[in-house]
Amino acid sequence: KISMDNGGIVTTPLLVARFCDLMLKGRLDKEKGRLVEQMIEGMVVLFKYMDDRDVFHAFYVDFLSKRLLTRTSHSEDLERAMLKSRWMIA
Image (cartoon, rainbow, N blue to C red; front, side, top):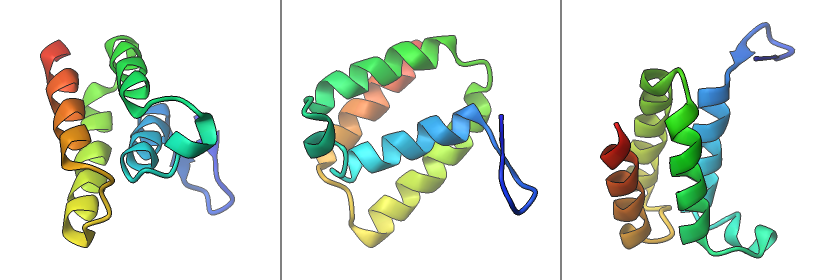
């Protein structure tokens, strides 16, 4: 866990959900030089080992709803791929 200046706590599920949010908005694929599909596969592996899956799910759903409402998602196909791959494990 990482402490913030305002006294809040940033947990691993929040950081992973935020990374997924940035990835699915298309902001990380250029910087990392990797394909987004490979990042999704990595997230699936990480999700297998995460203890707080329900906390991750809550943050992920919050970020997903914001992406859909503001239409900032990079690709609907990538959103579907992420949801399908993530739920196949759970």
